[in-house]
Amino acid sequence: MVDRDTEETVMELKAFLDTPPWDWPSDAGRTFWRILADQRASESDRLVAAELAGDFTVINNDLADMLLTIAGSADEPEQLRARAAISLGPILEQADTDGFDDPDDVPITEGTFHNIQDTLEKVFSDKSTPKEVRRRILEASVRAPQTWHQDAIRHAYSGGDKEWVLTAVFSMRWVRGFDDQILQALKSEDPEINYQAVIAAGNWELDGAWPHIVELVKDAHCSKPLLLAAIGALSGIRPAQARDILEDLAESDDEEIAEAVSEAMAAIEGPTGGEDDEDDEWVN
Image 1 (spheres, helix red, strand yellow):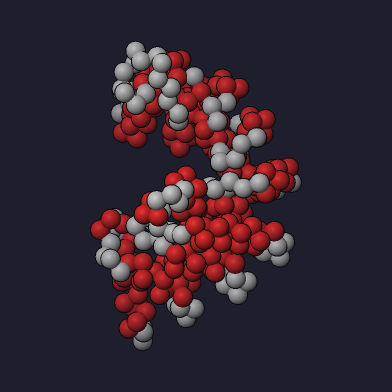
Image 2: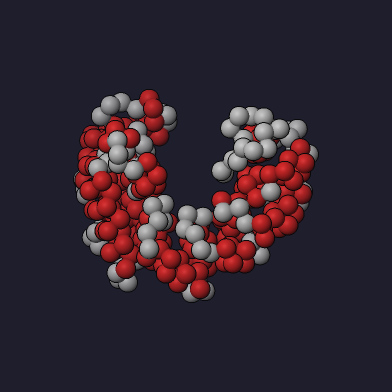
C-alpha cells in the first residue's frame, strides 16, 4: 500500500515541475525545505526538491543553508549532494554580481553568502569528498570567483581525467587567466568540452578562437547546441565581421537558430539598437 504522505509529496513535486516558477504558491520554498529535511523521503523526491530549491523565486537563507548542509554531509547520497551544490550556483552568482548594498536585491544575507563560499571550499578541499560532489562544488562556486579557484581549475584541467577537464573548461568561462587552455580545448574531440570552450572563448572575447568558431558556424554538420554557442560567441569576439557571417543564418527555418542570430545581432548593434553608433561598446 502506498503511503498517503508519499503520494501527496509526489503529486506536489509533479505540480511544481509542470508549473512556471513565477506561478508557484507562496509556500513553495517551505515545501522544498520540508522534503529536503526529511531523510525518510525518497532520494528521487529529494533530488527534485534540491533542483527546484535553487530557483530565484524561492531561494532564501533557510533553503541555502539546507542545500549547503546536504552538499557537505558525508551521510547524504552522492547524487543528492552534487545536485544540492549545483543549486547554489545561481544565488552565488547573483550575490557576487549585485552585492549587498541594498539587502532587497539579494534573497540571502552577506553572512550566508560567505558561509556558502567557505563551506564549499572546505568540502572541495577534502579529498575524501566523492569526485562527483567535488566537481559540482567547483562548477557552482566559480560563479562567485575566489582566489583558490585558479589552482583548482588548473589542477582539474591538467590531470588528464576527461570529466575533470570538462569541469575545468566549464569553470574557465567564469574565472580569468585561462586563454591558452580555452584555445586548446577548442581542438578537443570531446563535443561537451568543445561546447564549453566555445562559450568560454565568447565570454572572454578571445580573438584567437575566431577562425575555429567561424568554421563551426559554417559547418552544415555542426550539432545545434554547438552551433547556438558559436553564434553567441561570434558577436563578442569580432562584432563587425560577425554581422556578415550571421546574416546567412538569419532566415533559418529553425526557430532556435533564428532567435540566437537575432540576439547576437542585437548584441552587435548595442543597447541603443543603432548599427551606426560606433562609439557604443557592448559588453557581452
